[in-house]
Image (cartoon, rainbow, N blue to C red; front, side, top):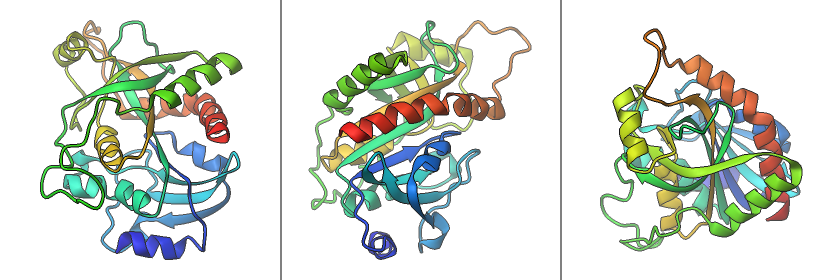
Length: 266
């Protein structure tokens, strides 16, 4: 029902790309031309984003010559929604016909070489959230046991690295660890995640990627490193949500430039 209603609200527009804008990264929506704003709250039965820095709108319009639909804020498991509701916006975008999905997030840098403000291309992930495909399989969308060998599209990763080198934006790359939140991780957990191969940690994204890959939609993922997630903090150090949003906002311009050029070349 939500997909049918959303399609009616698009006024004949057909988005080619879906974009998920994470914490503090909603400014990319400002670059969308001739925007049509559709609040999540205006769609019956649709979850409403309550997280800091998430406005809770679909923005439909033109970006770099392509028709896109952007989620200005996502739905998180920690907000109390079931996983079916967390991924509902992604499934709706798939049902209205997107061909590729770009996901972004704010993340803590587990890798000791990462610094606040770095952009990390997500090459793979480690999922510590409930899998959104648990339950009856939706056969018309995808198979019961979808392959996850390449959850993030290698050709899109190569494109991003090439563009980054071309325009002088330094890009990290690595493995994203997704946990439930909403509490920030302990120093011992950061050390554990680093030991098992994680480079950055957050509270989202992976369920969205799983349902996109279930439907055969290629995915590109990128994280803004908003804090150094180490295990050697000073005694008075505290992780702060406001600081995370500020750091994400500070990196938004270079992420907007990178993704805008990527979309132009897709």
